Length: 217
Image 1 (cartoon, rainbow, N blue to C red):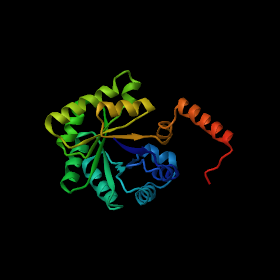
Image 2 (cartoon, rainbow, N blue to C red):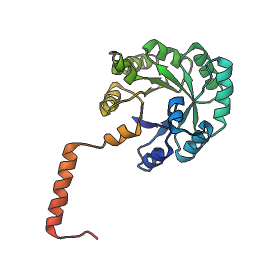
Image 3 (cartoon, one colour):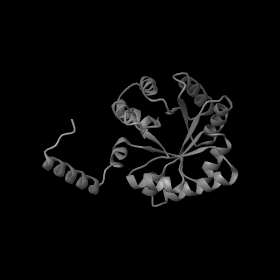
Image 4 (cartoon, one colour):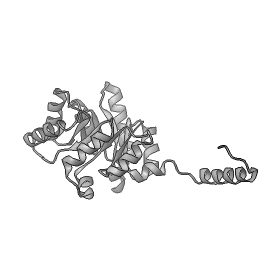
């Protein structure tokens, strides 16, 4: 499974990119607002850091506005992915960009039917928001499984990008459910490497090594 980081904080992106674990980045208006920086400037800087896809979301809600903004965003860098809302206008814009060879990420997906429409529109990625479904007592992981079944049934190439991830369990559960990608907050990515038994084992190794009085260098 590919790992995207879900943030607009450049420092976090640089740090995680250096680990070799990062395959791409997703941003959205809320994340840009939290960063307090200029949207276009942030997107350009992120694209210069990572080689993988960088999702940049349009702000318009009508077809003509999405196309105009998406075309402008696509000029920032070759790895920009146009992020579009899952509305009829968004799907129409998705079809337009797909026809021009521009990658798209259709976001705010909450049902299998919506995911089916996005695939038919040629979306590169579909972003089901599993955490927000869990918040209202619906099963976000089940949605991933349903989309996987539908896409496999018909050979759709749209990649399932698990979004709105809140915990490390969301990551492993999404992988088990067949998601192609998970876009994960930086704090959750770091927690993936943590385990109390790892810490306990490492502490024992360090103490045992110190007791030998030896040095490797």
